[in-house]
Every structure is written in structure tokens, then in C-alpha cells.
Length: 390
Image (cartoon, rainbow, N blue to C red; front, side, top):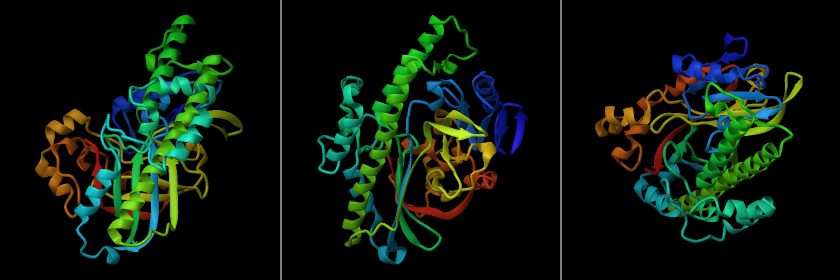
């Protein structure tokens, strides 16, 4: 860990000047106390630095959480090993998953499945009078968004750990409804700044003040969207489990299930005070808490256990962290580069995924080494099947 300023601590050995400057601007906000923590995967982000842990007192910056509220990971450990898979054709499993779960931006379910209905009921009850607001936010009903993946760095994988045990693994968040909720409140925060004649260096630093109706409504909507994201992952994982059962010809016995956010805000106690802790691209890593840190497609991912390291606010990185912008990566790398990175992995070969090539990200092993104060590695995954939306 390196102390860059009194209010900015950094765990990233790979970090560019623009990322450091963005994080420093955020750390200077008077209600960011006592310091902002940059995780090993930190990189420039919209609104706030991805890989930042931001404690605030009396205010929250909606853009600091970002638009994919509740984005995170879920993993299921099965009783099966690579011996059980044998020489089965993995493309069959990939195609099955691709049929079961809508992939890509703007792709949703056509109808409600039996498994999703009780989850929808929970969210409707949680929404209460706010349901009509959520119903009107997006063109496609949020009820049809539950159980869908999205695009970008979201993925579904069948992976193998160090003991050749099969794990099912996926990454997604709150989809269009979460984005719309976040965008709504970011705009409100910016309007509040104008109303109160507050000029900021960056409009994404706009904040809501605790105790105001705007703040209270944001917290309510934020909690709802975070729960939507968690249930979205649960729904997709249940479908992946069924697909794997059909593929393997036997029921899955879940040995372990881990579901964790890495874009979220909640009230926590740190260093003797209550704060609103916003983790944008960071997982909660209390002592003994299990978490998931994915690499990029074609590289290792990890199950970790938190060490509860106080200066990081009991936090750890959420992934590899980009070093190439998406457009630049798509223009620079070739499909042949992607082929080399994905040797031995069943995936949908497409130039649409060039921006997700491993070389567009930091070396995940360097990120894990930088995080050794924060977590200890329990399992290391290598994928055998990768599913993504373009």
C-alpha cells in the first residue's frame, strides 16, 4: 500500500496518471473521510475511478457507485470434476446456456419463467409504492430483465479449480433498470448542485445530502436495485445449473454458492465512525468473508477470503482492471490474437469480443499479488467454457 496523499491510499502497482488524478479529485471532497482507497485493479471510470472505495459522511455521490448498481459475481461449486466431463462436446453446453439466458445489451426474456416469478414477487413487495416509478423507467419491463446477462465484461463460465473440480461462474448486475435508476439520481444530484449554487470541478462529483428527501429516495432505490442485481445473478445461475445437469446427465449437488456485489453502497463502521461506504469495482473483504475476483476471458479467476484490512475498509479488488479503452483495443487487436488467448476454451469466436481480450486488461496475477494484504486465495479457476454477449 502506498499513501499518495493524506486522503488517497493506493494498492495498485499498475496505475496511470489520469486514474490517479481522477481518484485524487474525488478524495478532496470534504465529506470523503478519512481517505479514499484505490484497489489494485484501479482504472479510469465514468463518474468515479473503477476500483475505488469511497467513505462518505453526510452525503453520497450517485456517480461514485455508477450506473451498473449491484454488479457482481456468483459462483457455484459442483461435485463434478473434469473426469466427469471427459470428452463430451463442450460446444453443446455453450449453446444450451446461450439459449437459456438472453445475452447482450437490449436482449431480455420473452416471458416470465416459473423460477423468476417468486423473485419478481419479492422485488414488487420491496418496491411498494415505488413500483409504478420502476415500471415506467425502461422500455422493456424490469420483470423481463431479471435473468439476463448484458454485454461488455459480463460473462458466464464453466471453470475448473486446482483440484479439477467444476465450478459454474458468472458476472452481471442490475441491467437496464439499474442504469435508469442511477442515471435518474445522478441528474437529481447535479440539479441540486445548481439549486444550491455549488460549483464542482467535475459534475460527476455531484452529491445528495443526508437528511434530504432526495438522499432518502436514492438510498431506497439503490437498495432495491442492488437486490435486483443479486436476484438476477441467482436466476441466471439456476438456469446454468439446469443446463449443466442436462449436459452431464446428473443432478448438481451444490457444495458452495458465493454471491457478492462489487458496485454498491451501504452503511458501515470504519475507524471509529459510521460512514456510507461506496465500493465502485471492489468487493467486501471482512475477515473470513468469501469473495470472487475474476480475470478477463482466457485468464485465471479466484475465490478469495477477506483479511479485514482496516486501511482498505475491509475491501479488495473486483477483477483485472482495464489498461486499454474498448475502442482502442478493438482497433489494435485481431481475431488471431484472441484465438491465441483462448486456446483450449470453448467460446463464441467473434471480433465483437476484441475489446475483452486479456491483453486489454491488467495481469490478474499482478492484481492478486498487490492484494495480498487484503485477501488470501482459496481457489484458482481456469475456464473451459466462456459465454458472452456482444
